[in-house]
Image 1 (tube, one colour):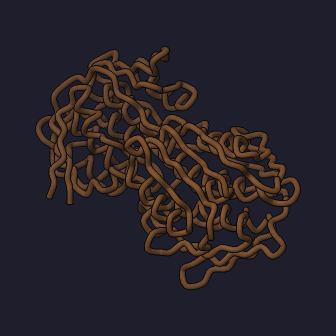
Image 2 (tube, one colour):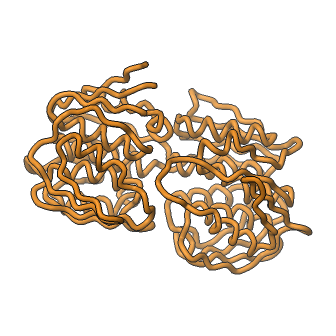
Image 3 (tube, one colour):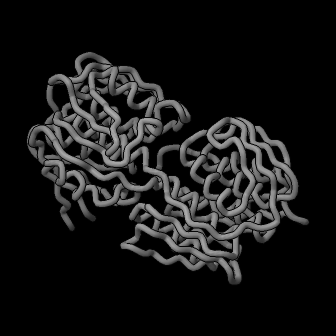
Length: 421
């Protein structure tokens, strides 16, 4: 099993290219199930999760071809469709559940295994099932599979979610695009990935309004056609790499970065004493002083502080002046990186959904273990600023969400390498 070796070696400087968004691409790819015409995605990230979604779609009958070294995903679903999403593929990735809505809309029935993914909380499927049931689907759970059918097809309806789930919003919007009549989703997720999906669906002939707000209205159409669509910039990769010069010092420009994608995150960086400037090339980040200031962080649905940047932010705050409090409100089990940071000399107390971080002057390299995708990169960031060597094991998580991370960080002066077992 591969590991990542990191040596702390001072400030980082240069440019780093930000990839297309993993979470956007994983929602866009299942949209090919909604049409018998080709869907082509450009600016696709080159990640293991994309390969998993490719395998899943292929098992359902779609043709998926990676072009331009994987940066273009050309898809078509014009043949016979298999309605069963098998456990052996679905268990590898949470986003596999996003085939449920499209299969229901296209076929009127689907059998989809309960999903897997990072162990960061329960993330219940009931938000998805109740949203689709509002459109007339009948869904039952049997032997670990969701059995869904919509006799006579899906029908437009008004549904209010108890929590603005991104995945449930995506499933509802895709299913409602082919439902009969008008559908309204209230308390919808507002993330840029939702806007990106709706933009793509509208290019395919859907009639969707309100994406990016808490109320999305969808007028169902009889069919969708093909389209070509660029995947939006990955705001989580963007935020992660913005933290590299914040933690280590130096000045780095994240190419393609946009302030609108990370406004709440940038507000906390600036509060901590980090300079962020938007320009024609992207976002340029630099650290003003030797140590950052302590700040309090509460994760919230977009446009609030992203839960997917909480672990990386904790790595920054480990060496801040003062005490920071991080509150995790999205997932109930997302401080698993804290014990590993403590192994590196961090002073962290975790109590339920709160973590109190007392800043220390310096972290020290140590062998640590990644527990999930974002935790793994937080340990790499911490290692970049620590004294000595840090070895991060179980980095298979990392390849699910960051393309060529060693190459990108090496390009701005980091000493980082992959150790193959």
